[in-house]
Each structure stands twice: as structure tokens, then as C-alpha cells.
Amino acid sequence: MIVIDATGLIVGRMATRVAKMALAGEDIKIVNCEKAVMSGKQNMILAKWRERKHRTDPFKGPFISILPDRIVRRSIYGMLPHKRKTEKSRGIMAFKHIMCYISVPDNLKNQKFETVLGAESDRLKTEFITVGRLSQLLRTLAKEE
Image 1 (cartoon, rainbow, N blue to C red):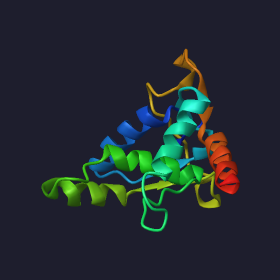
Image 2: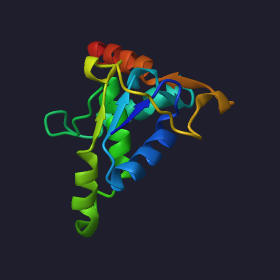
Image 3: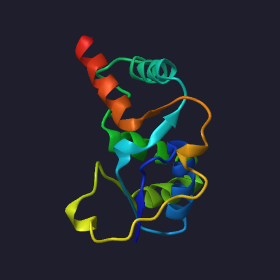
């Protein structure tokens, strides 16, 4: 079992590497998902999420969760093979090996945390927003609508 601390990691880069590890058969737990970052300007990221939500009828879907752990888990799902029938079951089985958590749960506090090399946000020269802040902004947008 691999426990990854997502604090300060770029979501997309982390998601690609986690997807590869899951396809290799590893059990992966990701903690502190609210502290992971997405690169880009805040208003552009919010516009993208707003467009996803209003793409179709709200009673028929897509049902996109705005919790920080679910945002990270959905981005990992996008990196796994899940569209072609031949690889669909392989991607679904790999997705079952991935769990994301807000903060650190009690059963994982004694574990040694790892990081994903090449996904650190200190290399970013552009603006970024944390997943926790994105979740807060999406909640306030949902209340206004």
C-alpha cells in the first residue's frame, strides 16, 4: 500500500503517475486532497467547472461532486482507460485500488507518506488554486443558483 501526501502537488501530474501505479496493481491512498493545486487562473478554472455542471439537465447528469477528495479522484479516473471495451475492465479494477481522503484519517496516521516526483507546485510560474479553495467557491456558486 502506497500513501501519498497531496500537499502542494499539481493534480494533473499526480493523477497521471497515480493512474500508472494503479494499473500496475498497487493499492494507493491519497491524503490531504484539499491541499493539492490546480494550475491556472481562478476565474478560468471556475468557468470550466461551471460549464461542466450546466452541460445538460441537472436531473439527468452529469453528477459532478464538488468535494475536494472526489475532485481529485475524478481527475485520476480520467487518466485511466475506461472508454474502450477491451481495456474498460482493467481501468475499472485499477480505479477500485485508489482512495482519496480529506486530511489524514486515523488509520493512516502511522504510515510513511510518499510524494510524487515531478508534480511539485513550487516549479509553477503561473497562478494556481488549491482544490479546497475550488471546492469552497463551487459551493458558494451552487448556493447562489
